[in-house]
View 1 (cartoon, rainbow, N blue to C red):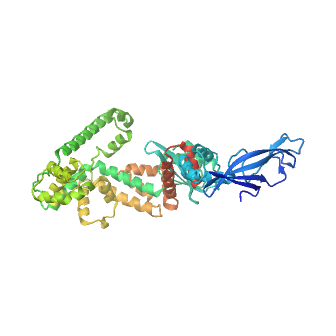
View 2: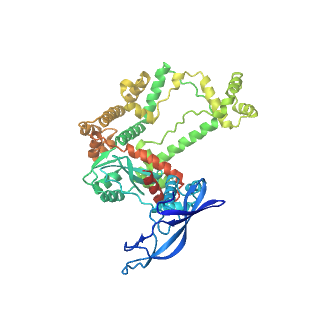
View 3: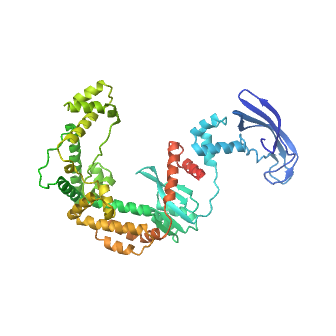
Length: 524
């Protein structure tokens, strides 16, 4: 059945489509201007409409439409075309139900992909038409939200961000804003009065926007972001004491070797070119950091230092906060290209062939497609395994991230080896011992439901390695208190951001913000 407003007069099968000849059933209609009903037909004309397909074939409706004369002599509209609201919109070339199906395809996959899918479903439409339909689509206004979550999302990570706002009670997206700006957020909140709770991250932009747009709402800082801030503060503290970490690692290695005064074993021979390259880059980073310190002592800000060094502003800030240039440590990698040849290489190694170039030449004749550097890395690792150096003397301290994690862990849950390392670390840097204790206290407060110890923690941390974190908590203390005592968080918002990322990556950047917003709201 096409529509209750039409009756089928004739069916004309054709090679590529099915043509239906139809007429309106009603004998009278209403004037769209004055609403007066009339039966006075002025003339007829043929209207061609596309409808939903039948058996994989395009359906075309040839509608014998009518023009009517208005029965109201005072109406400015003397002649009008017949309206069929359940079948087709005025001036449209597709039926309403076909338009709904094509719009759903456009919302699901976008313009050009939607056009290709529509062609396969015998509902041909161009990508540009789908985009116009999406832009023109309207959305029912959502119910007035009471609890909202605000977070940012990346147009391009590290460079350009937008804002997403969600209803936390109904778990749906309310709106997508094109930038991360306090004025934009405040303007949106002013247009939606009645919001009582705003869950957000620690960004000052959203705190200011919420303060201006909804001054009576309770702001709730997200617990996960608070713990993330704690971890970052601990990593910076460890970075400022990395000499102490290195000293603790050496003490630990000496202790595990069984003789702290033993002479060091000769270093394991590795690829000389690779070692030279790594040492060159290490020296270059040291020179950059020394130059950054000189410019900093001269009174220049990180924003002024960055273009002179040729680095990013954020990188300069991180190096200054860490107290030195980063020490890059690559984990050992395993090449899948080597797997079919490992038995052969082990056999040749046991026979006494330790030359990397010769081994590479031999396995290359056997079908190896990797580079010489891959074989050199294997020989270096094999020499290290077969060296006479006691394994314990090659013990290396944990990375900065792992060290910060160990400081925040309950000491009773750590193994003996880790406890001995932390003992040496605390002897070399007592400040890190205090920072670890403060970190455990703060995590316990955030994970609990009582904010009684928050102010005392801020006072205790003010003169410690976590002073910067304590100062930030003090400025945002009401939102942090609400994070402890209230159940709201931005976790549902993060889930919606994952959906947003999926839609954004499907679109290949086409049609920009309006299309992305429409598709996300349609998905919600």
